[in-house]
Image (cartoon, rainbow, N blue to C red; front, side, top):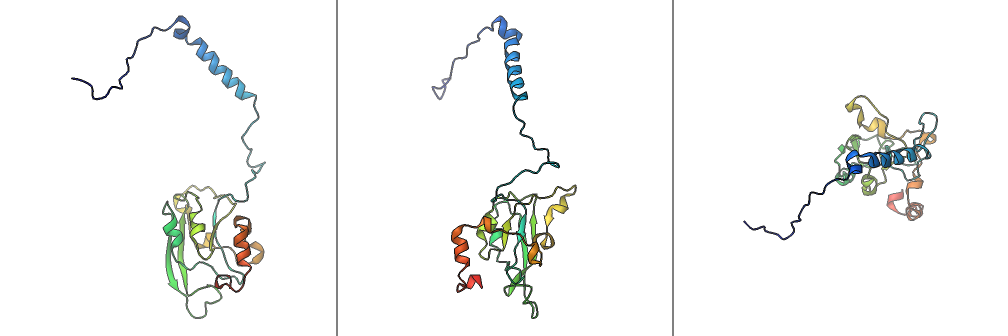
Length: 191
């Protein structure tokens, strides 16, 4: 039977030398690399005593933003859930009732909004897809837990507080063009 390709290589059984058989040069070479790493600068951060500095555009825990009047920006359009490659975002939309104008910005809002942090890959596609600038990734880390069901964040963990002093500043995550656009009050988006 003839081979189909002409890429076969002839393997030779080369005899090992005495030094290769006792593995001593290979062991010494490995020990030299190990000792070289022992005297280098440590890269480990001693966490509780020292906090690691994160860049301004670090993608951490999600937050659902409020507008200047304290109303939720999210309109439950579902674009963030569609854009999410890990399918970590789920939501249920509801209609705003009379008297709830101070709570929700639009007629439709997210009655249930959940992000499964175990599935999320923190890519930022959700904040890019949101037309209302309702969801952002912050510099905060996702806290570790012992139970898997605590990693499903609902609106109570995601929506920022009503107090303007406790709100999260996301202006560093926005480009100068977006910040300039937001200054124009004549645009419907900025009302």
